[in-house]
Length: 232
Image (tube, rainbow, N blue to C red; front, side, top):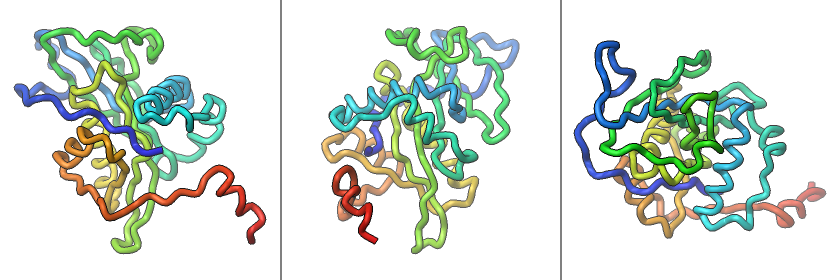
């Protein structure tokens, strides 16, 4: 499935502080605390719901057959970054509780808004109790460039739930993948975008991505793939 594309970033606003505030600093307005962390098997239910929402956004619900069971059976079977890896985006109106993650240091930010963000699905996406909810995810895995003689990361899915779009969160998720690729000494990060999603194309170009219009995706799946069962 092609990577789901977030809408264009918001208009420039005054810089917001990053990380957690100092103990003597009281956030003004309506702060939203954000964290990117590694997903775990306990997150499969939320991931499944977001994949379905992504299929609706991409107009591809007729191809959506994943279940929580099938996701549980195929994800999280290998150490992070060696195979399928998911970064989960969590948000809360209050400071996020500390978590221990030996394989990836969670990324935390604070965004200040004039008005609170209303999440009509908050109850369905609660994460770890309190006011923490899942707002989006990015799924990626290693690939390889023979031209560079280096591995890279391929982003299969990038998705931010509707009420959190146009707030820079898609960029935050994609930037986390790019930063991980640099940290690991990888040569590039790649993904696909639907040709009708002009907002996403503009967004990616503004991030510095090159849109490779001369390439086309080739895919064997379903009956066409099964035809090769006894081919060799």
